[in-house]
Image 1 (cartoon, helix red, strand yellow):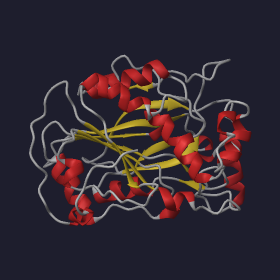
Image 2: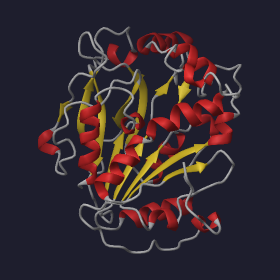
Image 3: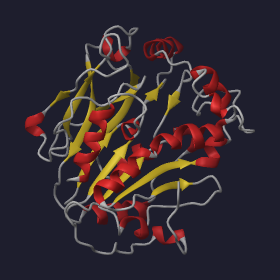
Image 4: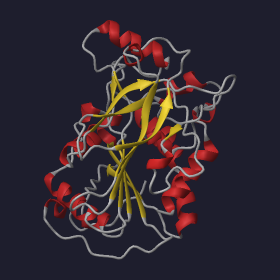
Length: 340
């Protein structure tokens, strides 16, 4: 991932006003911002299964023989898997969106492999119409939005035609008792995930800073079409989809463990659930299912309100990758975002 040229990232802590620019229909400017601290993630203690990315060696064994092209890497650790196993999965999105809009899509990292730090400052915000905060960070690394960045986001969202997309991932193993953690693990069945894998502390800090009553919870196994790895159709609230985001979209993907985006308050600031995904009825039990739930919230929309002129969307970060099924519909969803 690249990094925008900056003179001093400390400017993100100032109250510099984002440069005003008018929205041009059909030529949306997307910025893909990965909120992880690469070195902090790569330094994870591999003796501990929890709250870290798998190593290249672990993932090669899990996916054998599909990833044997990674055998020749001298580094078989966490950092190599992040670079070649994770980031490579996001290469198609900027390519397709660049073709759709005629605008290059920069892919930025909060802290990249070399330790360079890119905050959400005026240089990131000013030339962006759709800002994607992809929260690939584990909670243990302590990624949180700063007060200066909150001001930047509020100024960004005060502009007509803007859209903020916040993409957390699952929150597995938050329960204190081991029995519940074991139940959750058996439900999703992915042995590359430890008993606890809590993602997206940065996204959670953004939810709190912007007073958005939503939270990523659990790691739920989605229902698949019988005999395939393809996801079952979504339950779409077409009558509430005022932006046409799900026009022509019947599925998302079937990643092994997807979060439920819980709405935490029932008030005027509450999000609009545009899509729900059915939980795999053949999966092992899960506390969320035992509580009577058969679906989880897969897409939440916060329409403009008060001083906020822009839209906010909440969607899982795997939806920006074409590796987990539902390819045609996922790409249609991307195209719909380009036409907002």
